[in-house]
Length: 119
Image (cartoon, rainbow, N blue to C red):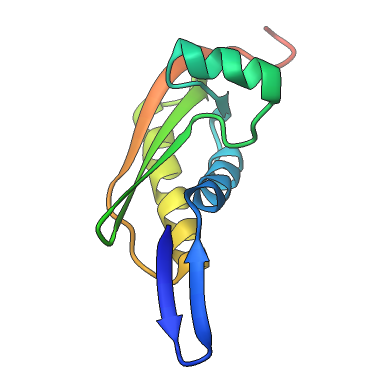
């Protein structure tokens, strides 16, 4: 958990809350069609629970927040541009919400998907 103390009291933000913010930022980025599980166990667990934080891993070490994202990209878009946009959007939204800088944002493209009427 990230913590902040001030004269009025303390604030703690859980990794799950950070993951939810990151997930919403990813899903609103052009070229992303969905989130992917990082491994088969997460994929099976998501089928049972429908966790909205699927594909987001938040790592907290000391005062550093690192985020790993596992995404599915729209076929026909430039993968490097989409990944860069995702990283920038997540960094912006999380830093805006928390009021502190974050460390690494790693984007792992797990697959491509064709969508639309021509599919």
